[in-house]
Length: 312
Image 1 (cartoon, rainbow, N blue to C red):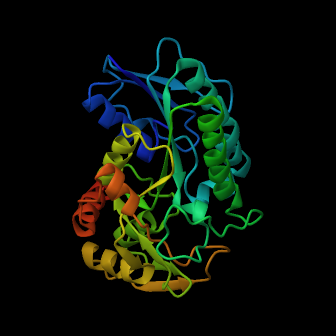
Image 2 (image 1 turned 135 degrees about the vertical axis):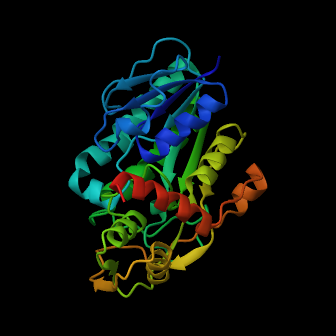
């Protein structure tokens, strides 16, 4: 049985990846220090013989006994509310954590996929963003701890690929949503939905003209799975190119929830990207991948999950 190590296994994306690899017949080793992860996300996997879990911080030395075929590095705070609160840990998991796991991959002769992010493009001057764009990032701004950790992560991964001949893959993830998102993670979708369900006004930062592109989690997982098993070592954008302004998105959530909430405006946070839309040409050509789940459909599933979590 092929064995895969998934870091950040108790997180939003990590837990969905655990599900997918179990379904595909792999033995899954989940690892998480639970700094932002939640054991509830993987409690349904704990009784399974093909799943094991280690409570461990990958910024410290990582040991896994036995053979490992694949490593997926998804351990990292991923929302501004988290990485502004724990900036040093964010930098360490992207740098030391990635270095430790690349060392493990080299020792085990495993293929390693890292979770990079659209944030490597910063506040982009190119639209939509393709993989050849180098980005517009403020390294010393509040978001720099996340953006630069991910940029370093890509650099050290490519160094291991070119210098050691290690099999590596890099996925640049754009805004993703779905069940198991944290209600308090500070991002637009959980914030809008929890505000709407609580009958509170929806908070839009700036004038709401900044854009985002939301990809449903099942589509993202499919893209990651295909990339891991492909022969392509350079970064690949995986996201949904359907772009929407945050004001339009807030209005969609109001309509979907049937709330009487209004929209209120607050100042735009420093270095908040004005535009975010993936160019997925590379994913289409190399992976034969594009998103299938319409936003309307994905939002209904996500809303049902949040209602359940909030007891609504």
